[in-house]
Image 1 (cartoon, rainbow, N blue to C red):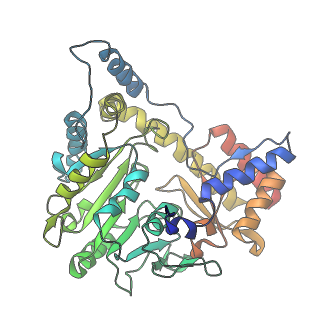
Image 2: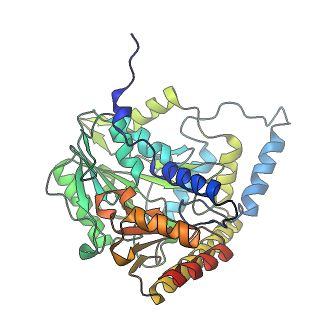
Image 3: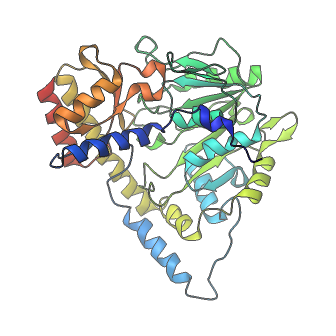
Length: 403
């Protein structure tokens, strides 16, 4: 008799952002004239860079030419794009070989799929609050134990609290874990890490036989002299896998592309993870489309870099508007400097979901409850700078009137 994977049944009914969407839709049905301003999900609003669109249009034209037509591509991605990525690392004096780069259809998928490389008894450590995909994907693999609804924690997960007291940066785990998730600039808190502190994590991982899963999806927003890649640290290639994305810098949220770096030196029980991942990809993945990869390639051109810089600047200005506006209103706010996210303390001791309902009902503004990111997120709230300038300014003014 066919049976369901019981791990699915252990998850909360809805993924965080699906739950937000459901609540907003229910509100709109009862308030049909409401002007909803969305600063919740981290989706972009600026159009794709012109150079990217032009490159994809040219790729489409190639599909009409029998001599240029492309069928199945390399499982790890086309070499022209992987070389552009490798050269981009080199511009920061960081060496990443072409064969260490695997192009994907967005970082989200690989941060979950990478778990297939590791035994199901593997123990994970996560920052708390945390991007929900990290925990949920491990829950589906049966690694997390049981969920305690009263504490908001899974029984087998090592939580590394990121609080006001430690500047929202995790401390080295007291309980040993096999896989350690780090995300900088951080989602959701917007915090950043110095190279000196990141080196401590690399040293710890190498000394304890851990693998760091390093999510650098927002590195393009770093404005200070801080690491853009974990491979800027000595010894990182023997303990870290890095994920990067084109979604939030070049606006690829709708057309999907990113990449994962698995160094040749990285081994577990003598096995080269790079080659195991290539074997996995050749079995279960046919690669991102040629057309999309041509667009991603244009992101690294001189014109593409200029356009991406302008996009980043637009969202960074939105972040300043939110941060300064809410701070002037007397709220306790964090993030925004090296990140597109603003992390704020909910006023009047409201819970995260109470503040969500309050903003939605009284200001028609949508954000993300901090508790949806983990127990240490309770009492906090995330806003995103990815809205339009007009939406951002209007939302801030509405919130200020309520506080």
